[in-house]
Amino acid sequence: MRWLLGWVWWTILPIRKAMAIRNYRFAFPKHSPTELRHTVGDMVWSYVELAMGRRATLEGLELMRGGGICLAGHGGAWDLALISAAAHLPITIFVKPPSNRLAAWFITRARTRAGIELLPPSGSSQAAYDALRQGRVLVFVQDQRHNRGIPVDFFGKPAWTSRGFGRIANRTGARLFGAWQWRDDQGHHLRFETLNPTPPTDTDEAIDYLTEYSQHFYEEKIRQHPHSWLWLHNRWRSLRGKHEQSQ
Image (spheres, rainbow, N blue to C red):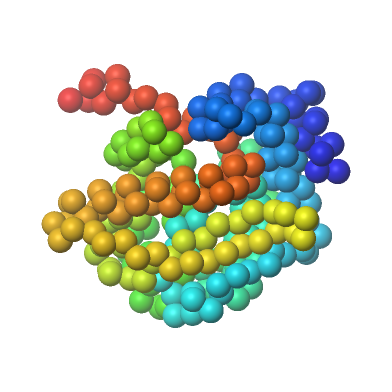
């Protein structure tokens, strides 16, 4: 079924196919873009499994007790992994709902029913600080383009990246973790690990350092499981003209 779903996307309903192929060839020039059929098939099937009540196998869960800040990313089974973790951890996350109303309804409903606190991307700083004080796990997902961010090297090319993780991590001194999910023959897996960056003492330099650190984390995880990342957006779109006009 996963193979069939991937084939339908590749052959009949090639939504953002050209974008996905261009991104994949840039990041993994030695890989065949046809591997993306695997990516999309796994992604779509994970939502079927989510509706069926299936969950991911969790590794390193004991590290997360007591809360902290966690970097996570858009692997193929992103929501299945998030909701699996929420069964064991109090989770707060910055999230932007999908533009499709039906998809937004389904995903928002599944997340809220799992007890996940959803924060809008802007204007939620105080709620994020409150979540950390309450011992919750504050999740950042910033492996996608942020037009008001800073350019950070990602697979050898500048990518506009939010400073939100770096700003809150530096200000609070909270424990830092990373999480990544993937699928193999045994099913879905989500692994947590402790992160130990060493930012400089200057505030602005520390925020930029932590922002760069976040992208290095994502790149390492994606290289370990290339087919498990969602490549359907323009991560490296240039904003040069826009920024020059604003100056």
